[in-house]
Length: 343
Image (cartoon, rainbow, N blue to C red; front, side):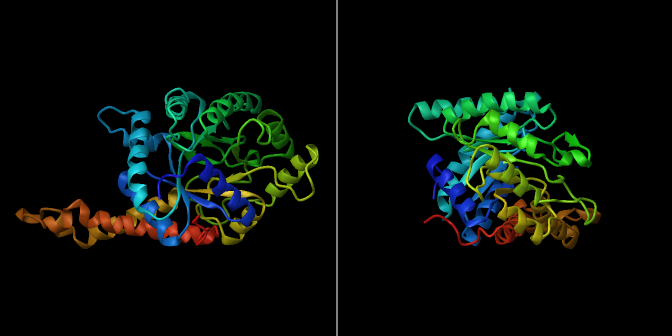
């Protein structure tokens, strides 16, 4: 199937919300990790989301002349071609973009999609993320409102992060402290500024103790039940019926979360969960095994010539793709998206 159209992407998110499941959003940094993500979704019979961070886009742009936009566009164009081979729908998304990178990343990408839509085509990306968590909430929402209008005009969904996620990702760092919990007041101010769909659809990355990166059990206190408080507080404020869930939530910093924490988050309106750390390891672990097991073949030891069959990048690249795809398939199971692909 091709990359999801705006209509299909909206349907995907609606089905996730109604069915209390979420899509894994897999960060990719190469054509090979893209194939691993697509393969994992296909093997799970799950639709999904592939995303590119600012650092990932810069890496994709090449080290000779680093450029985030060309890297993101190149992989997106590649994805539009190869995704047709896979029997699932996949949306393309750009991950965390702070204020100082908007002009070099998200704004140009929205402009590219706007031009495509004006020509009668679909947008290049289906959603973009604005990470204003380092700004005051007032400034965050003002920029969010501007970007939401631009995204809606290009048939794109915007993701916003209103309060910090702990840890570090692509140079954006937040301490692990009590600020990692979004309040009902924060959520109400967000709805007042960005609307509840009337100004354009957006995904909300609220904080409930989330931390990016690797952490051991006990180091982070996740409170996914907090999301229910946010939904109910906003529903009450805006006259929604009891039990309504006004927001489509995103679960950041999901690596290492328990299945119980994930299940609670899904029940409270999470439709997208980001995975990067776990899939990076799943990709690299088979490569390390290959190198250690074949050290005298991948290296020219003691004047020998090595073994081309084992230092050929395809030999270890296939194992890396398989390992990452398996982790994506596992994520689909945890998020209950297995077997839910649109027909």
